[in-house]
Amino acid sequence: MPGRKILTDFPLTPTAHHLDDYRARGGYETLAKALHSLRPEDIIQEVVDAGIQGRGGAAFPAGRKWQVVNPHDGQPHYLVANADEGEPGTFKDRWVLEYAPHQLLESMLLCAYGLGVRHCFIYIRGEYDRPLQRIQTAVEEAYAAGYFGEQILGSTFSCDVVIFRGAGSYVCGEASALLNSLEGKRGYPRNRPPRLTVQGLWQRPTVVNNTETLANIAWIIRHGGAAYRAIGTEKSPGTRLISISGHVAKPGVYEVEMGYPFKTFLEQDCGGVAGGRALKAVIPGGTSSPILPPDIIEGLSLDHESFWDVDSGLGSGGMIIIAEGTCMVRALAVMLRFYHHESCGQCTPCREGVGWMHRIIQRILHGQGTNEDLERLEYIAKFNTGTTICGLGDAAGAATIGILKHFRHEFDHFISHKRSLCDGRLELRCAS
Ligand SMILES: Cc1cc2nc3c(=O)[nH]c(=O)nc-3n(C[C@H](O)[C@H](O)[C@H](O)COP(=O)(O)O)c2cc1C
Image (tube, rainbow, N blue to C red):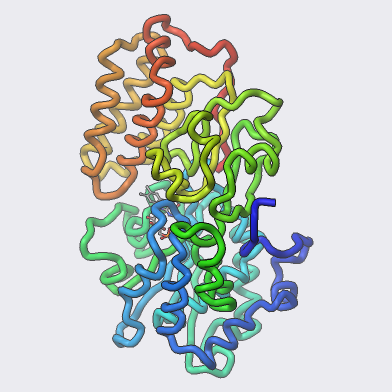
């Protein structure tokens, strides 16, 4: 068992996602209590004390983001649950939407009360049909029971929620592009400053948090920030939903206490590498987190500090297992095709640079690569970093630099022999 559980600590019966089941587990009791006994600033303080970091990729402390918003400044504020989940290999928010939708809604209500928010949004990935149905049903149930609407549970707090379906763009998961998309505009990321907590949706203070981040809030308010902080490690409090896919025996979504050893997780909980093959590499947190070879990752525990120490990250929790026999040149080609296709084209270094990297890797794959191509790939990847409005260009660069750092010999071999070093043609395939 990968440690203590917060989000998945209930039996997955066929009706577990419905309101009656959620209430039978104590659901919405925390909201009722909070509305009558806590001040908005108490909610924010508990989240600050919990030290929970964002689960969307950057691990920014949620409490620090929320503290920027003054719940009493008299202007409209907005809250958005980011359920776009476009990062390749990531499908853990989907689990929340399908199996714990009321946990998310109660958490959003507590957050809205804390931040003085009247209107909430759930921005959901366009491809997510069943998650959409589940969250829609949950919203209807919650409205019928009086948890949304005017003067909730006899308090002075009123709140509405709108579900907004995205159209399948990866960049619309980036918080500011998401807000533009919500406003009906093209999903282009915005320059900062101003921060979104100062000028976000319709230029009003807006908190955008990842779906998993938000789903933890009901537990935090129920048990207190200190109780949350006592779970996990000192620098990475709490648990993490990890969606594991690729060449793994038991793919799926697992809740793991921060600090749990990676090797135990892969071998005991996930059944090891599929078909008993040897482990070749792991992409730990979505393709935007640099790949790691076994000799590095097998010594790590699942927390942010361990992965940052080796120039990678737990990112969005989308772990991809890669077995021996997989061609790393093809693996990088898959990733660069994705980033090139998803670049919104607003910033030159990303539009041109990622396109250039994509063309170089295709050239190598077609047996026309040269040694200078590798230098060029590395140069463009480094040059892109930090020069674009959003992190998409950085992500493509990080994926490229990481794979060249650990598997350069495969690229050299491909260029000089015009074919892969790997005999087998295992493909890098991952769910997302
Ligand atoms: C290209 C790009 C795509 C992103 N996609 C997502 C996404 O699908 N879901 C998500 O929660 N965050 C995504 N993010 C991160 C968001 O911009 C933002 O940091 C996050 O939603 C904040 O929530 P958190 O602090 O709870 O993690 C993306 C960022 C970039 C640069």
